[in-house]
Length: 351
Image 1 (spheres, rainbow, N blue to C red):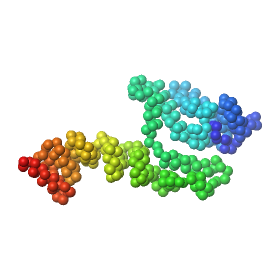
Image 2: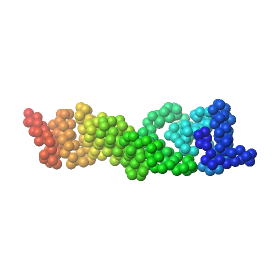
Image 3: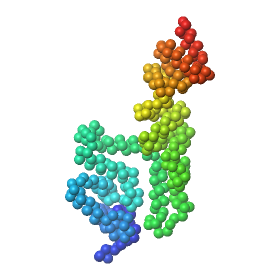
Image 4: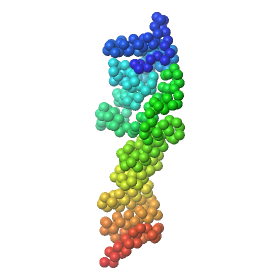
């Protein structure tokens, strides 16, 4: 309402034009006459001859239908207005004439959530362990949305507003690129997505790999988490994240991703590396559990067999250790360190 003037000013029966009323609304707002300003902003919007924004009459119809059919009406407009300066929604929660910002969408989600609780539409809604307000904070804090997404959104909005009806004269590509102000890797990738040269998820993966090369493990995880959460049933992204972290020896950071694979789709990969990492930490029992599971899933991985032998040896099960190292050498007679370890186990058993 506040920051979008009528695209094509229309005129009402009193001869008032939308553009002049919009200016009056701005003056009233600046003078802190917020109630009057809000009414004028609404009137200016309704006098827009380009009907991009629905007239206020539609909200009256929606309210009437809600009462008639006893259907919950979520007060989205009231929620956004309540948190807006002067109780009038503007660019604080809108990207253009009607699409919300990230914060705007989060408030809309909060409004729906509160209505669902009040109508007892959620499981155990009356005995929620975490208060709704605290849940909002947790959701916002853990929401996987990075600066790459913000940049891409900003570019799309700039591109949108560089065309009719936002401008009278269409901006050239060079003028738009100047407004984009591409400065770094993130910006370049966002521009490539916008230009349909790469997919959104690949941009995040490419930026993640770049962060890891710079030694920024947190940046890497942030970008990969966005992709993982966008495709929650596609385990390859979880696996590749773990593989990258282990390649760069960030073993502790890899554990949550390995555990996620283990819980959702236990395989030889997750069990093997959870076993190896636990063994390196001296957690012998945990290592033994995972390594035995890994061998049961795939008994032809010499590295897993070698580590299983080591786990048996460290827990005093020398004969099992010999059996595992023998299997390792059967699979790969030249596996590094395997023959020497076999001789060490044999000497122990002979004594």
